[in-house]
Image (cartoon, rainbow, N blue to C red; front, side, top):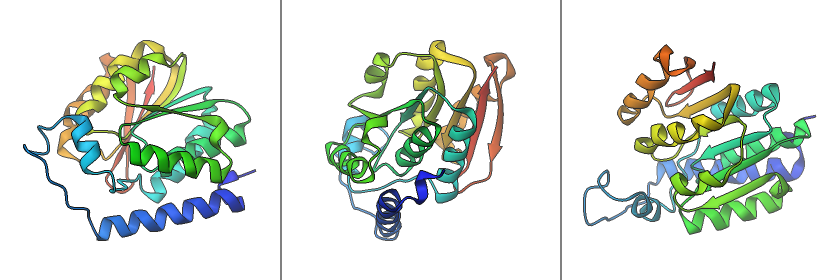
Length: 215
């Protein structure tokens, strides 16, 4: 069984992928009072509310496969955006017949769009959207956590992981997207240092992924 190929889910994914490709070729202009990197996470989210910033197609398929294989009861996603990765994780949970996805997002526009996509795809019952600052909202998620996807603001990926570490089950998978970005250097240094409790390998999808197993 592969829910990704069901008519309702496939239609929503096709729409989102087409919109994401259009977003990449027609980037949305934004204006902030200070430099972008120095702005608050909420300012950045509001400024880029029309930008899809998706996980790549191959990356999404990898997420589905990893979630199907590991059968996590709790999946945490840091940074949903318009939900391409969220839908793939949700489809895996639905096909596993067990588990739940907790995803975070700061943009009200993106949250509304994701809610509609989940409703149209019939996957809304396996996903909980946590609006607001992930460093606060993720404190409400009960472990043990079997899988984490880190795809929010890159300077926050390591703080989010460190906050959730106490709730990771042995063998949990931690996947970080966009690992070719310079801003992911501290994160990569952390998970690649064996004494921090991970076996970590890079995976060659678009913009890079790092797959780490909690050991």
